Image (cartoon, rainbow over all chains, first blue to last red; front, top):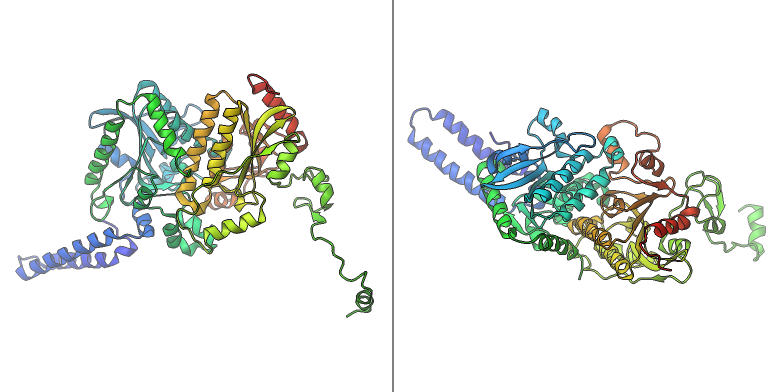
Length: 315
Length: 282
């Protein structure tokens, strides 16, 4: 059962009507069957047209949809033979950032990403995808291991931001993020990052300073949440939609700004309506970027990654 | 009108003295009334409570560099590529900040010597849009590091920023990896990178170049952190520990090498550069 977002209400109403008709049409009532078919066609058309012109704020809601596939779903649907590797060897094990060895269509990779969880228990376990210093330091450890063994690094980014808490600050949240970004830039192997949901600020960039950066069609990536920007710049929490538009947070905007390299299409109605198809498209897109980077020397890879970021902002 | 005002107004010499508002100032920490010139002569440190006031690039250059330093030009960058507007247009905010500040953006570099040792010094100015890091700050940082590499000397930066410049959206976030590319190049050249964290340094600046120094110095009492205190308070819903995110707290938690009083900063930097420079350049 799909839970509908606020802007999907007209579609939800149609779907409810269809369900109602189905319940009454116990005998093969041809009139009702044709009515259902008509309504289903209308609902599908409405879904297509709604998702073809989502506003930046609506995309933010889709990117945060509770049923959107997360890291562990992609581990099952897009990768095989996943071997999770735990701990930063310094303090602890952070389940907000998961990593390990995996295969993508047979190709060996080091897979790292944020996991938000899908119900109360798993959301708490994964701290809503908000990484702590030990999570970023685990990512650093795994990236260094990937360099050592020649494994390309694939990251799936999906976080509202790094965890803002007392203990995270005490253990050096800022330093951990800075070093994780540095570790991405120091990789001797190819790195492909995909923003699959929310790319929230420094907590995202620490896992996304890659050779190639992809975004799912309805993912968002921004320097601060639209709510945060609204309360700081407009001094009210009510301007999040305006802030999302002004900050240019969508995959389509970021492609135009050369911040990302490609947009991975989502099924009609968003990734949560067909996680299998989404995972297939994501796997294909990552695979083709990896294929393009294979055979490049580590010097070429390092240089391409550096130039990519140096170019942003220089005239 | 009181009789005193009547008398005063009749005597032109006593009428409304033309005193600048900033002759006296109140220490923001202990409330002591301070003669502004004395405060500045004391490196903008309160003589009573040792509160380290926020200072701009020019004062910092003069305090740290030997006389005869050269302020380097701020590189030009694309302006307002997002066509950003909140309650004001971004170019209007930039214009106002430029009118109120001596330099064109929040980070300015100078080259000179520190007790005879050559260095490039970058200073972030909190008064310029909260010191925020946009493309100009990123590009200036890269230019400062490149100059240091060309001159075979160290790069020292005094940080002060609320974080990334929201008006530049994702392009400001991309300055985090961009400045990190620069610190890596400085390291590859075997040159020292020293960070002086000043009040306040938070957000994306702390989470990138401000935490990557070979040596991390903090000024006494400086607020240094990743997340803002209000955000953390809203998350944990309890009182924050005493001195949380202050320089001394970071030192206690192993996040900075030392907390250095402003009067000792120049000598400390010279000593460190003397140790870390492979061959001393006089």
